[in-house]
Every structure is written in structure tokens, then in C-alpha cells.
Length: 218
Image (cartoon, rainbow, N blue to C red; front, side):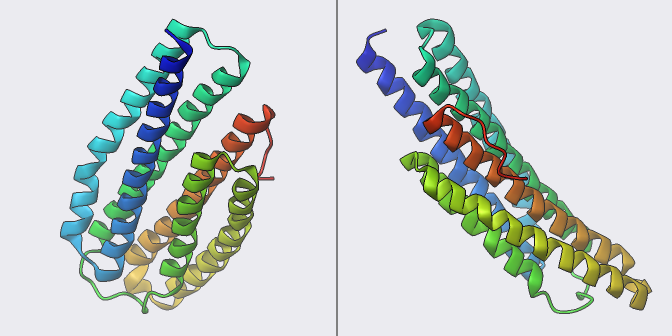
């Protein structure tokens, strides 16, 4: 394999990863839209479309493994391939979390919310923004943007803690809504995990560029 061909293969991997990121972000957007509108049909579609994300994850990892086996790349190139594989895993898990949100939407169904949704969509908006920005950071190999994304995780953690406390309070005051409140608390947890996986991607970007591992979740 010539150097030019190898670079083309790396570029192809990166393009596949960006497409996977777009699919996962779309799944999350649609699951939150389904929640806000209590749209069970849309939630079912999110679950059905997850197969595409899973298939693409397998393709990326297979292509990356093939490149390592065939080319036996040196340190810098190997880091790029490893970073792609790690980010691919985190993106696929974001897709899984979107599916989990969709399942909670289905369980909630069309029953009136215990109180109008406001803070959960706000929390979702922050995580959605994190995904957009971290994908851009990966595409540009920009560690400064990656660090900025990771800082948002603290904001999400605070929102999560506040929301769970509020939901637990609602549960004691509205026993008829316990099942729904549990699902809403699950959704908050899923969004908090999305932010964690996004932070993992930020760490992978720094590893890719600097060749060092940093824990941005601490």
C-alpha cells in the first residue's frame, strides 16, 4: 500500500466516523423530539433505525483493523486509527442511549406529564450541542475545542443532580405518577451518559494530537 493510498484509507475512515456521528446525533434529536411531543411512532422509528448505526460501527472497526493488519502503521498513524476506533465505540453508545430514551418515551406513552417539561429539554440541548462541537473538534483535530466541550460536562452533571432531586420530590407528592417519574429520571441519566461519552471523545482527540491520555471527567 502506497503512502497516498494509506492516507486515502484514513480519510475514508474519518468520513465514515463523521457520518456515524451524524446518525447518532440525529437519533438523539429525534428521541428528544419524541419525548417533548409524546410521539410514540417517532420513538419506534428511532429504535428501528439503530440497526444502521450498529452496522456502520462494525464496518468502521473492520476497516480500521484491516488497515492496522495490512499497513502496520507507525506511531502517529496508529494513534489516528486507534482514536477512530475509540470514538466509534463512544458514538455507537450515544446511539444506544438515544434508543433507551425512545424506549422510555414509549413507556410513558400519551399520559399527561406530571408537570410541563422544561429542564429535561434544556439538559438535552446542552448535550446535543456537545456532540455537534466534539464532532467538529475531531474533524479539525482541535484540542482546544475538545477541552471546551469537556468543560460542558460539569454543567450537565449539575443539571442532572438538580433534576433528579426535583423528580424525587415530585414522586413523593404525586404517587400516581411514580412510573412516569421513574422513566423521566432514566432519561436524565441517559442524557448525563451521553455527555460522558462526548467527553470521552474529547479525550480521544487529545490522545490523537498529543499522544498522551488525559482524564477530562475528573
